[in-house]
Structure formats: structure tokens, C-alpha cells
Length: 248
Image (cartoon, rainbow, N blue to C red; front, side, top):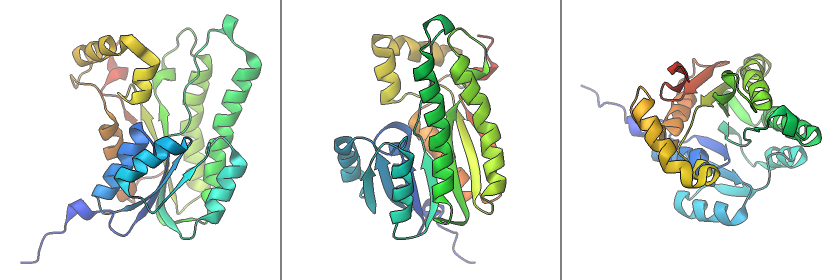
């Protein structure tokens, strides 16, 4: 009988670029890529936080810049010394404001920068990701239910799946997928909620069908699966612990 394949090394000899790698979902994905035998190129905005994360991960290289700077995104991919297998971006976040309080200039900037950043990563990674490799974006599910202050986030939540499907055709045979996350218990979530974070965790543990809070390790595990399964492209994969199934 032959020996069983070592599934722990399912990303052996593969390279993943992780944009947003200094904390949260990006950092946990970098950990899991390394645990699966892969190598990582880590990108983050803050040099100090990126250096601390890199000391743990031991990546091939790091780069500190804001992914919203599309010229810098172009230079980054142009300067890569090698083809990579996967690119994951967790960069970008939601924007919440009721219409009466909305600064239209700031709102236009936020929406435009998020769209331009996504397109820049797709455009400039072309030719740098191997055929059959993966381009993965992380978005959200929060804007799917109408609510006060959710107009901009809802528009982006609706736009990203359509953009992903179209990019999957344009970039084929590179695969393009979207991870749509609900509440994820990250340092960013904790900083945004402040002293309300424990109450939010308790509420989710009691109400979610999975009876626990979704963590960065859950999102990272899905990301690694999408990297490995070469039949998956053009789709949006929800990971919210069943949050959307609840009535409110």
C-alpha cells in the first residue's frame, strides 16, 4: 500500500501574497499558509505592526504601503521577483453614516478608493499569478439587510460579488473568488466596539446557529480551501456563522 498524502503540506512550494497581513484575518491566513507548507509575501500599511507579524511568520518578504494607493500597488506587483500562486486582500472596510450626516466628498472618496483598489489588485497582479492560482478578496455581508446608515456599505456589498464574477472571466485561468464575512472577532472589531465588545460576543454566542463567534481562523481556513480547490472561481462564499438566517 502506498503512503497517504501529507494533507498538512497542501500548499507546499506555493507562494501567497497577503495584503493586510499585519493583523486579524490577513495575519491568520499567513499563519495557515505557512502551516500548510507555503511561503508568504506580507503586505501591510504600518511598518512596525508588519515587522512584528513578520517576526512570527518568517515570510519571503514584506512591503509596507497603503493598498488604496493604486500606483504603489502597480509598483509592488511589477517588482515581484517571481510568479506567485495566490493573492489575498483583506484591505478596505465598511462605511456607515445616515444620509443626513453623510459627507458626500468623503463618501465618494471611500467608495471610489475601495473600487479602484480592488481593480488595481486585479489589474496589476495579472501576469504575476500562475494559471490556476487564486485572487481572493474579503468583503462583508452586513450591507445585505437594509438599515439606517448602511447605504454606502450596501452598495459595495452588492458590487463586489458582481465584480468578482466578471474578473473571474477576464483573468481566467487565474481564479477569482470573494469571501463575504459577517462579524469576525478581530482586533479591529474590538477597537471599533470598545467596551461594547464583550456584550456583542455574548449576543452572538447566544443567537448564532453555530453558538460561537466567528474568528479570523475560520476565515483563514476558508481562504486556504479556496486556494487549494482549483474548481472554484467567480463565486462569493459567505462565512457568518448563520447570522443572515436570523430575523434581525
